[in-house]
Image (cartoon, rainbow, N blue to C red; front, top):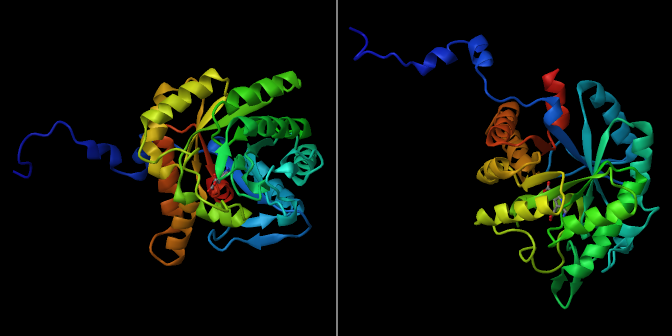
Length: 328
Ligand code: PBG
């Protein structure tokens, strides 16, 4: 007798061949799940590689537009825009962040004009514009909450006026969602949505991003506003507040090390949940693949499906272009 005892349950039957595995697959990553974060830089024909993120570059708009033309037919739906701001324009009040004719608003106008269907998501935080490299106003070494809210609200209105579809506050100041919502509504941008970075952790996985934007804090760290990686109840508290303040979508960031937070937010949220596979997560996979340690496509796909399985409705990923190409 081959069978040691009678087995009526054999889960392996559903894994027996590729077709049955496809039929029984519970989760999928599709083009409709993906948001492509991009680093944009003034100029023409700029395509500067970022050393810690092989395959990702700082692009001028013409280079980005060529990519968008290729990727929209493959299902690209949305960009998250991150502008690179010249050092000479940075100051302690992030004045350039509220310049209506600044690089970001001009870029939004141009992209919206060329690609009206493309969803443009813009980051609301002071760090790329701040000489201190912090997300809010700094005074005597402290990051001030309430005075930062007005600047963030102005940023959001300028981005909305330029044509942003969704503004994404990534600053983690208390009360920013409500403050931004009210400012948008008062300026007749009630149709502009908010994707709040609800559970944004103080993470070392943002390192390559800060290199890409040259936006690392000039002193200290971001632990007085971004969340402690040890905490999860606190994420639910942030979720409650953001929902009450009127957010349209919530986000967990980073993604792979915070899958439990994604599931918890998904279980408690009445709005879609996004997850940001951040720069350090991208770097881990691409650099390990370059070193011959893991297969790039397999590692990428496994990370993305895990984020989906945990409950993310949307994923911000630097892998978006390659995934869209591979889905075709
Ligand atoms: C800006 C911001 C950061 C990221 C997105 N928006 C950096 C930070 O908070 O220091 C990180 C994204 C990534 O690492 O890919 N507040």
